[in-house]
Image (tube, rainbow, N blue to C red; front, top):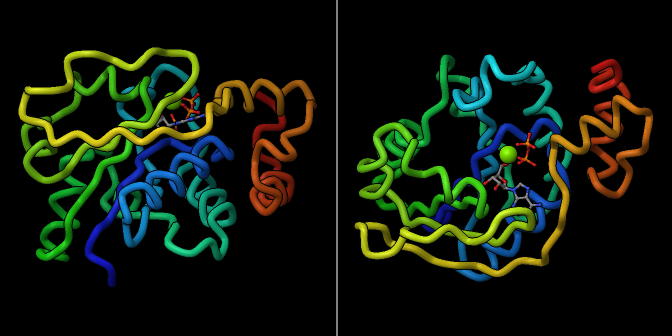
Length: 197
Ligand code: ATP
Ligand code: MG
C-alpha cells in the first residue's frame, strides 16, 4: 500500500466528473499513491437542510465511477463508522491503521472557505496536509496560510458542475450523461435514483 494518501471527502450526491478531475489532478500534482473518495455517511452540514440520498447508494455511484482508474478508490470508513461524518475522525482512523502514511485532505475552494466550522480542526491540521483545488463559483478563500496549516494548491480545469445542479437536471428529466461517468449513470437508472425530487 502506498504511503502518500489523499482523502477527498464528499457527499457525492451524485458523483460527477468535477470530482474525478479534481481527484486525479491532485493525485498527479502531489505524487499521491492513491486518492480515496470518502463518502460521507451523514454530512452534518447538509442533514436537515435537504434530503440526502442513502449512503449505500452514493457509495455505489462512487465505486462505479472510479471503476478501474488506477489510484482512485471509493472509501466507506465513514459509512462503516455510522453517525455523523467528521474528517478528523476519519484521519485518525487512517493514521492508526497506517502509521507510516502521509495524509492529504483535498478540498475545493467552497469547502476550503468553511474549514473554520469543522469539528476538531486542530486534529485535521496535525494529521494532514490541506490540498486546495480551484472550483468555479467561489473565489479562493483567504486566511488559510500562516495559521498552522500545511497547504498545497493544485490547479485543475475549471468545471462548473455541481451535484445540486445535477439533481435538478435529473428531476427535470434532463440528461446527466458525460457530466456523470457512464457507469454511475447506469447505477442511477438501475436504482431509480434522482427521478422524483
Ligand atoms: P452539492 O452541490 O450537493 O454540495 P458538490 O458538487 O458540491 O455537491 P460535494 O460532494 O459537496 O459535491 O463536494 C465534495 C468535494 O468536491 C468538495 O471539496 C468540493 O469543493 C469538491 N468539488 C465538487 N465539485 C467540484 C468541481 N466542479 N471542481 C472542483 N472541486 C469540486
Ligand atoms: Mg458541495
